[in-house]
Amino acid sequence: MMAPKVERIDTIPLIIATLEKMSVQKTIDSIYLAHGNWSGLSYGQLTVLFVTYVMHSLTHHFSGMESWTNQHKTVIERVTGWTVGEKDAQGRTPLLKWWRC
Image 1 (cartoon, rainbow, N blue to C red):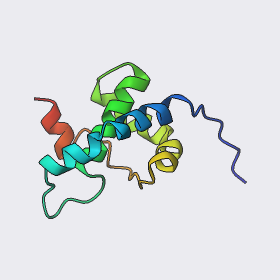
Image 2: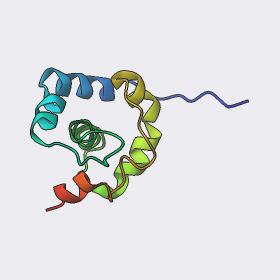
Image 3: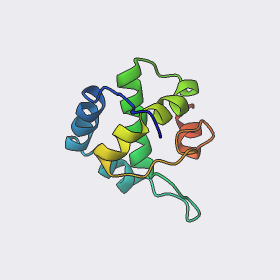
């Protein structure tokens, strides 16, 4: 039997709700179209995820985003309704490579 996981749920939902109210995901997705072979989160969803990571962890370094996403996966998925895959927050994701410029 798995031990219960205790996680704060105050900051992440607030940040995501604010970004949703600002239509960040819709705006990014209307401008940047993913390649036909693209799978996983859309560019707009990745943007929301990255901004949430930056605001929550107070850092902009990509190196910690994958582990942060895995730690908060349950809250992110429940608040957004997305399915967050293991590789979605990797630094090798094309959009995250593009942001490094």
